[in-house]
Every structure is written in C-alpha cells, then in structure tokens.
Length: 77
Image (cartoon, rainbow, N blue to C red; front, side, top):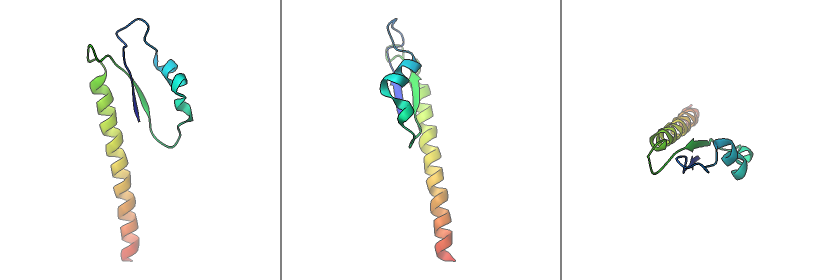
C-alpha cells in the first residue's frame, strides 16, 4: 500500500511520522506499506513512490510464482 503525503511544498504539510500516526498505519501488519512525501505541484517524490510500488508488486508476484511452482512440483510427485 502506497500513501502519498502530498502538499510537501507547503509549510503546513504533515511529516511522514504525523501521517503514520494519523492513519494508524502501524496497525497494518498484513501488507507492505510505504509513506512517500511528495508534491503534485512540483512532481517531487511522485516517481519515487511509483518506483516503490512497482518493486513491491513485482516482489509479491515473484513470491506468488515461487509458491505456485512449489505447489505444482508437489502435485507432479
């Protein structure tokens, strides 16, 4: 799960720790999550967030493929 902490170009923007507490993200233990500071106005941080998301999805797909292969191997035996 990717959370964009937008508006980082503004003085009143919440920092990552504040977003963490506000959304109670520490209670989410059944999935990988990341808070990405960004500014949609300046586009800063957007590509970093998307890169993290792509890596996270790829990692989950690789894990699923490995489990499927292991399961398939047991079926053939």
